[in-house]
Structures are given as structure tokens and as C-alpha cells.
Image 1 (spheres, rainbow, N blue to C red):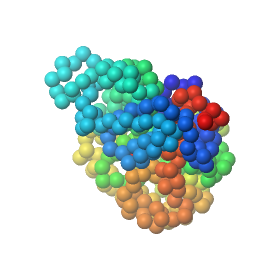
Image 2: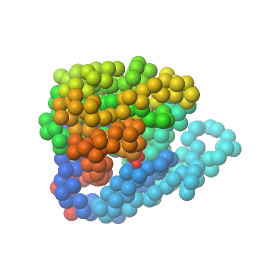
Image 3: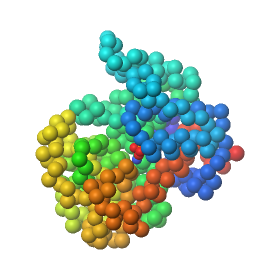
Length: 339
Ligand code: CP
């Protein structure tokens, strides 16, 4: 049994498959008492709509209680560095926060986006690692530099539509956005689809937009182990050709991390990566999805978002079912044990 859900790297394909089977059962049978007398703290250092709502409702549907905290807003700001003189904005240290919360609640979930200053620091995922170090209850990642909860929902959606996913073509396409965004969903999308043996293509404008080598190498390794292919493309037409599932996401170019102006000078040339009907017509009748939130007619056209093949709403719904299955697993409960 896993103690934490910080990323899916150490979760086997079989374990995740089991979660997805549970999630489909929970979709048909949503209310149970698996979390009766259990409390989970949900800490948001960044905004959320889907993650907050799906966790809060899901915990309630299983008889538990969610405690929402926004450190720096409705809760004290937290210092994460060791040995510092705390004469800045933070009112308390992670050591006390994690220890105190561990006496109140049965799990702690955290959303902590990168700071977008230095990728070498952000890529260490220090906030969630500090919680894992100092808390004595399970830690759940609600998006840091990866978004494992989104991975589960994405994979449930893909499997429910494609059935057998092995060697089906998954296209992860970069899209334009006015700001440089987190790479978490893109990192996660490559990780989970490669783990399930899909033929994965990463489409992005040029080599500056290729994701961190850790996630590229992980996807390559997964694909190799599964007898699947992994490729990086900068050519829109060939990348879309024969795709079975198209997933869009925008992110900032890592070589310009922390330099918004220099990154903008690159990104502004690539509006044409927006997903539109012509691009989708090149595919093998692919489904389209996005983790949401999505700016219409920036990342994807109205026509794509309103098409029957767009399954983004279903993926968002699947956040609810998959997170409930993951929580039951962390607390050692299988679907058969729910009352
Ligand atoms: N996809 C997702 O995590 O949505 P929120 O940012 O609204 O939680």
C-alpha cells in the first residue's frame, strides 16, 4: 500500500488500472462511508476550481470532512526553508504546520505551483517534499510540477473512449497562451500515457519548448518497456496525422524560465498552434481534451470545444471519481470494503 500520492512514478500500471476500475464503479455508485470520521486538509497556495470542488465534494460523498486552507490568505503564510531568520512575510515554519496538521487530520493535500524564477530550484518540488518529510499522515499532490490527479482523470477518459490503449497514438500538443504556464500537466500527460503503452508524440514549436529531460526520459523509458514509440515533433500536420487522442496544453519555454519578456518574444510567434477543426480533421477521428481551465479561441477554437469529440468536461468529471478511488486506496480500502 502506498503512503503518499505525490506522483505516479512509483505506482505500477496494474495499481493505476485498479484505481481506474474503482473509479468507474464509484461513478455508478458515488456515495459510501469509506471516509467516515476522517478529515483531510486541502491546502491551496494557488487558485483552483475543479481540484478544490472535486476533492471537497468527493470527501463529503464518502462521509469525510474537508478542511480548506489558503496559506497566506485565510491561514498563516508558511516558510519552507530550513535555518532561516523568519523576518519576512511567513508567520510559521513547515515543521510546525505539518506536525500540527498531522495531529488534526488523516491526510494533507497540497497545491503549490512553481515560483517561475529558477527551474533548477522549482524542479526539486521542495514544498510537497517538505510536507512529506515533516507530516506523519499521507500527502497528496493537487498540482506542483506534476499533476498526478489529472493523470488519473485523463487515463480514465482515454480508456473509457478508446478501450485498448496500447499503441494508440496520443498527441500532446503545445498551444499558445498569453502567459508562460506550468509544465505540470504536460509532464504528467507524457508520464501516464507512456506508462500505459500508448504511442506518444509531443508536438511543440521548437526545441526550447521540449519539456524537462526527466519527463522526456521517463516517457521514452516507459514507451520502450511497453513496446510503444515516443517522438518529439515540431511539424503540426505530421504530428496530428492519425492521432487517436489529442491533448492540448500550454507551457513556458524552460530555457527562458524566469525571464518573461524573453520567453514572450519566442511564444508570441506561435498563435497558430491553437487546436482547430482543420487540425482535428487530420486525425483518426480523435477525441480532444484539455485539463481546463481553457481560454477559448486562444488554445482551442469554439468549434473544437463544442464538438462531440471534445471530452474535456468528462475528464473534469472523472477528477471526482478517480480522486475518490485514490483516497480509498491510500486509506487501505478496496471497493468491496465500502459500506
Ligand atoms: N485542471 C485543474 O486542476 O483545474 P483547477 O486549476 O480549476 O483545479
